[in-house]
Length: 276
View 1 (spheres, rainbow, N blue to C red):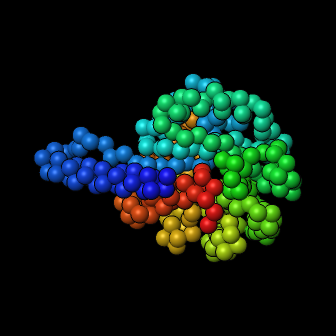
View 2 (cartoon, rainbow, N blue to C red; view 1 turned 45 degrees about the vertical axis):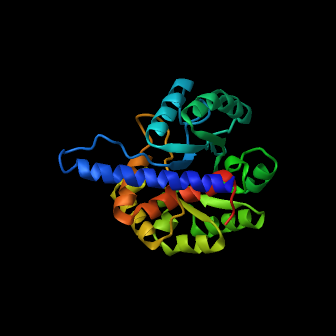
View 3 (tube, rainbow, N blue to C red; view 1 turned 60 degrees about the horizontal axis):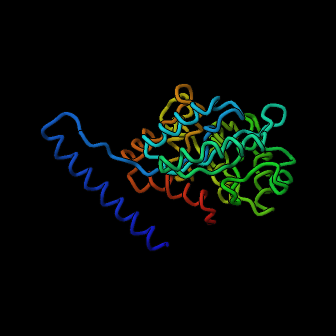
């Protein structure tokens, strides 16, 4: 099976190279290319599942978001409804029911869907995960952990350490929003040394979440502190998915290998439970 996957991936790379060469030649004669370069992207942080948090509101909106993901070259998505005490209740039965409704359409589009949680960290997190109250990412040991903007670094480190002690791998969601990290970027490196992963949002990389977030993400990317880039998309208009644009920017500035690492290779490990 691994050999087959390797063959398909090699075939995909060759195809992309051929398209790029053809586009380059076409541009000698035209101002635009008639061939769209397709990406291969996996999104591990997305609020596409309808009716369960502040993301998609209807099944039609969920399907529209899937269509847009397909257009952008996304082949795998982990749906991560919020769980935050007093704000988002994480209705597990409804989540699983709506997931089952959406799954056939995703399969038609060739998109692999999986369930997870964006868990706003609290002292009961390990208990909730081990007891099945909330889901890890795609049923693996990876956990998408969200912290408040003003969370102290000592608390972030302590809770990440607790998750790791219990055999989980915390992925710190949209770390560009954590003041304790933006104030001292080396704190991100300390979390990585502990065993945590770092996730940033595509929109932050693109500058759609403000200049400060864009500059911070640029420094993080140059330092090699980022493990995963995800969409954190919530709809088709407001907070929409821009993963293809982010991939194109990364490829231009840092090369295809780095873009693939952050937007396919590392997310693939999460989706399939491959541990570092």
